[in-house]
Image (cartoon, rainbow, N blue to C red; front, side):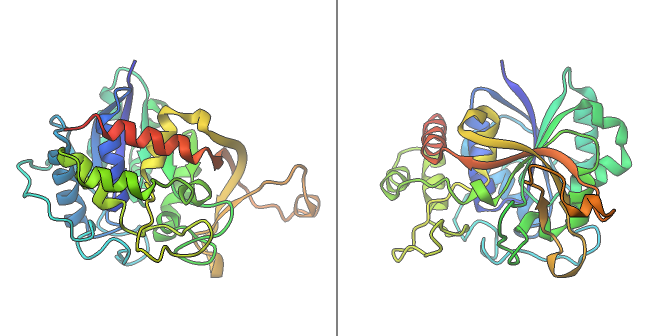
Length: 320
């Protein structure tokens, strides 16, 4: 039985790999994809998404443009993914057209029309989702859960303490976590661990299928921090990045997950930090009236990286 899914993306090198995986996996039914500015401009995100779907030979999945900037902050794109968001990888012009609806309306319409609650996989700043939940709170019962790539229970990458997707729009992430929809955080603690061996990436790059060749090219971009903090001198990183969050949907048993209170820091040097309370008992802040409200959500803290690497390779191999 397939799981109905909405993808919210800022495509992006690793978003591209996540889309390939989601389209290929037999247990995932991608109902629609919504786009938001983040890794690159909204125009690039939409175009990249459509071209990746072409490459994957995907069916006619609705794709809609959403927020061009965070709720409060000015527009700001990551430098990691290159000027076009795909590191300059040459893909043919798309033959698809985006849906005429705004992403928020496509999300609402799809959720309310679905025969069962839908899982939202958010691989980007959560601006679209925050707008959805503020404008149409009636959709919450139609959401199975929001599985988001973002945050960290340890250090950050955009700042010393904040992960990029949450840092890009902290208010949006806070709205989503506080919305009442069940949330699952796939953050940097696991994001940085899942890598593909260089030999496997090279095999993808020389494969006959266009999807495999695209995945192989994407794996050569160093978009995540190496676990040991050292960059590969050969220029290879092999991180599947956001695709790991989609792996979490179909193989949650490869993760160590804890249900922990989480809140998003909205001010000061820690702006954008996801503060994950991993204490086993109440601290002095609770005893003296200083505890800050947090919402308990599922947090991925460790992963069987080899298991997800194999899952990714086996799934992408199903594509043309």
